[in-house]
Length: 262
Image (cartoon, rainbow, N blue to C red; front, side, top):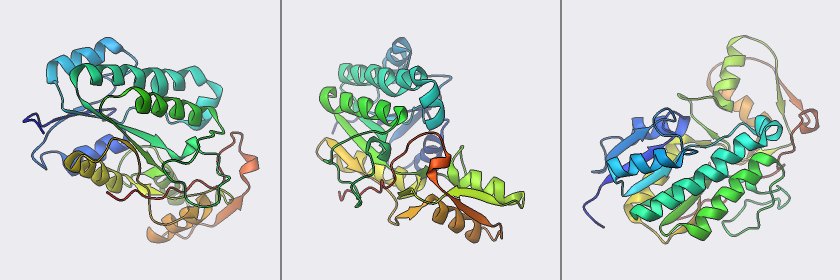
């Protein structure tokens, strides 16, 4: 490995980017560069070029993504621009600068029919437009990145940062109201701190390039996860289980990921 220890993080204003900044900045002997969307929009290829020319990073962690599943369904072009075109832009510039790209993907590339945790080489079959854009983005990285890693995760949440299920349930619980939560979708909720540690492990160990899974250890439904959140924060709200059919966008009913050992 060269003496270049620079790590550029795109989308650093999101929950994962903020977790990396809090948990990893100043550690492991690396020079971390955190760029929020306002400073680097991956849709704009010229902005990526300018950032790489300025910093010449050895690694690029792509935390930039359009993650709103419902909005992706209604405005698919928005999701496509970031999750596909933006990823293509980033991959090309990483290749030009011989930077190692670490791209974050999702369990939503699967259809949820397998009924056991998904492996890295399981066939993708996205059920919604968000999942499709994430699949197309990771497919481009796999096929075109000279130095590239895909890290898939499942039901990502931070207790401290961002807009996510965990924090949404907490906000609802603080109002003392009943909370309706889907009971028939299962995944592996993943704390951003676990994912941040996994990313740094990839950077330090540099395993074979390809696809890796990093997810929580416990398989549960959204309903079960909501109950866990309420209980561990000492709230007593009633959680009402509802069918996913009452929500508009089709999502995988069972999409836990089998963790990769490095």
